[in-house]
Amino acid sequence: MKEKFYISTAIAYTSGKPHIGNTYEAVLADAIARYKRQRGYAVYLQTGTDEHGVKIEEKANKKGVSPQEFVNEVAAEIKRIWDLMDVSYDKFVRTTDPHHKEVVQHIFKRMYENGDIYKGEYKGLYCTPCESFWTESQLVDGKCPDCGREVEISSEEAYFFRLSKYQDRLEKYFEENPEFILPVSRRNEMINNFIKPGLQDLCVSRTSIKWGIPVSFDDKHVVYVWLDALTNYITNIGYDVDNETDEFKRLWPADVQIIGKDIVRFHSIYWPCFLWSLGLELPKKIFGHPWLLTNNDKIGKSKGNAIYADDLVEKFGLDAIRYYLLHEMPFANDGNITYELLVERINGELANVLGNLVQRTISMGNKYFDGKVVNKNVIEEIDKLFVEEINSLNSKVEEKMNNYAVSDALTEIFNVLRASNKYIDDTTPWVLAKDESKQDRLETVIYNLLESIRVCAVLLRPFINRTSEEILRQLNTNIESFEYVSDNKYELGKPEVLFQRLDKDKVLANLA
Ligand code: ME8
Image (cartoon, rainbow, N blue to C red; front, side, top):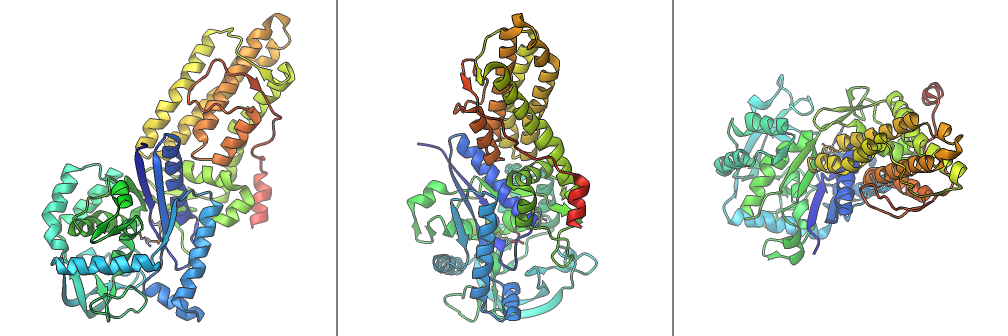
């Protein structure tokens, strides 16, 4: 039996087309999922859309369509982009799905029955765009700490979730599980800004909104979007209050939940308490990834600087964008995307370091040995170091990926690709080729290079799957070992360009 690995992304709001920042998250989760599959796990990757709430209701009204019609269109667009990006999800979920809605109603009722939800009156500072209530002390310059917009005093009859009841338990949990939230800086932020000041009961229903899941026993209320949205992680894997299916028991708790830094609060404070209220275990890990900026500025549709994945893929190709996102986004600090940087990475890393190496090596194999290359074992000192470097790559990648340091894992692979280019410069195959007596040495050198490329291609599979397959196709091998194999028999295919070098000035002029 394979060990299971349940990984989820946040579910994207269907308020509009997802920009490259939202898309990054899906690609990041995909890379981790593909990595785990490659390592023999039975992976379940869940992603989808968050479709209720006042913002969506307003947008639909403005467009003159029903909210359902509106979200159908946007959800299809989001799914199309995830597919375009090769996101290998096992399930794409939607919060307007009838089954999800029904289970959310059961959950709300169960929490009411067990006393964790009670009826009261809400009076507070509300940020409509973020659908969040704030306390005075949380405001920044009197405005919403998340989006910086005005908040307004709002009052309504409402149901509340007894978050305060879980104060001690949450504090203790954070203390005893220092690795629950990654990166650690975000954990500290949660403790200092939210837990230590004291948890306040959370308003979990609205009477002012229609577009939501009605509370089953009091239908002028709809369920607060975050209670609706967070529970997607369990309603879609077979959880119901009186029926935990085998599938649910197999998959839960999730192994890692991938979310952006702005919603760590919802996932590390509300979500654990909701789960405890249902008597369920917490996810093993919450990874709050950083944000992608454009020209070091926050991406916003209103700012007019939103970049979309489909445009990028059309202009630069899928794997160039996947590589850029996965490699350029640091683990904790925000990353940046500009066309200039993108072209630099494509030229410098994908075309030069990777593409050139593959093309040069296969060409030499074809030219000198008619494409048939075996290991002649004429080994020199430099080979030992080179092979050691190849063989230590897998454990380095493993170490990085186990910590979800995806960008660093890619850096490790590219270090070996760079070392391979240097190995060519140091061994000078074109000089060996001129010497009849060095033919076996030459073949050994080419063999070592082919093995290095093969190992890197196999390890690149989770990140840039299509390129990885293309390289292995050109190498004409199906050996998937993560280490140097000494008895492979290469019968090389024809080298084909993997990444076209771009003329930066031309590209930028065209975009302008
Ligand atoms: O937050 N860079 O949905 P969403 C990287 N529906 N990631 C970014 C980003 C950026 N510039 N901007 C946003 C929601 N994200 C809720 C989630 S989960 C139960 C409900 C991330 O469409 C953001 O942090 O606003 C979130 O993880 C995801 O994109 C979807 O954002």
